[in-house]
Amino acid sequence: MIVSASYKTDIPAFYGAWFLARLEAGYVRVVNPYGGADQTVSLGRDAVDGFVFWTRNAGPFLPALETVAKRDDPFVVQYTITGYPRALDTGTLPWVRAVDDVRGLVRIFGNGRVVWRYDPIVVTSLTPTSWHEDTFAALARALEGAVDEVVVSFAHVYRKTARNMTAAARAHGFDWRDPGVDEKRDLLARLAGYARRHGIALTLCGQPELLCPGVVEASCIDASRLAAIAGSPLRAARKPHRPRCGCWASKDIGDYDTCPHGCVYCYAVNSRARAKQRHQRHDPRSPFLIPLHQTQAK
Image 1 (cartoon, one colour):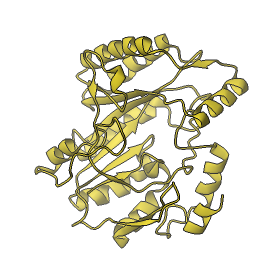
Image 2 (spheres, one colour; image 1 turned 30 degrees about the vertical axis):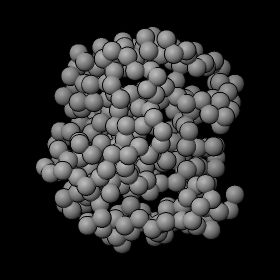
Image 3 (tube, helix red, strand yellow; image 1 turned 45 degrees about the vertical axis):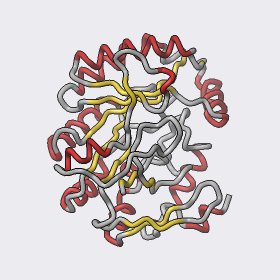
Image 4 (tube, one colour; image 1 turned 180 degrees about the vertical axis):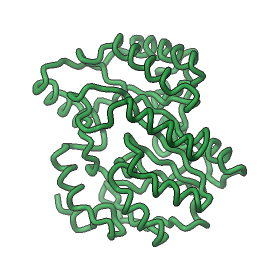
């Protein structure tokens, strides 16, 4: 089993002590967000084939990564760096610091451990397509030699996403839009060219209708990459965790509405206020990321 930690929240940035405690305990309890029964997920060495960590700030998580490495568990860090203005990303690392963080991880743990994520792509009057080209090119240049893949996607405009984006636009005086398919493909092709100049392959997450020359499907949960790090094949079976997905089978141990970064386009957070409240109630001694009675209290 590959353990994902977590596309629902930033465990490395905010919940490292909890993860280490659960690793020592050998299991974690996970809440079904759709009202089903909660589950126990083993974190024992005999149960885990590898870890995929998702973050915008891996610095606080270094002790946990060192512990995982000592267990000889292969791991990959999916590290999001976009350089967005504060009107869109309220509390994330400045991109220069994030790039330094990525390079530090590679120095400690080796090549292939970090995948850069430039997603989601959000087109606003603050971040028009020309802004994305310039920013992406600068980031690709800064990350040359540290990463070999960048995963991109365009924002999925769910109802809560539209609500939060509209509220932020009103508060900060910008406009936003969801570009058409042809405009998205054209931008992707240009970004792929910038990436290629710096030895980075551009892959696309979960949007096959946008695939174009130079852009291939992403496997964010990538058993092949983990196997290369481990030096042996993994037992994980290829199975998407959602439709139109190139990922391998995994178990995510995060929880929605628990990331206080404040990214206004985030699909995993209904409101930053609620996420901050739940983060404050987090108990690192609990087997649940948020203790169960708090999870159910809406």
